[in-house]
Length: 66
Image (tube, rainbow, N blue to C red; front, side, top):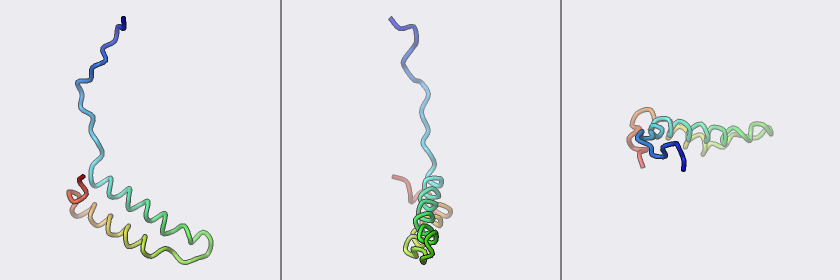
């Protein structure tokens, strides 16, 4: 018999919608900047997506709720 109680009464909180959006934006910035390491142009489409996610995360994070 185990002597420890295996039930959990505490709810686990997830991350906020704002932090999720900012993490996704940062990931797209990395994707956009990767070609710069080889002397190529940045991926402009990834910069646009990063800006979109950063804007939504800052202004209306509720739109990122699943």
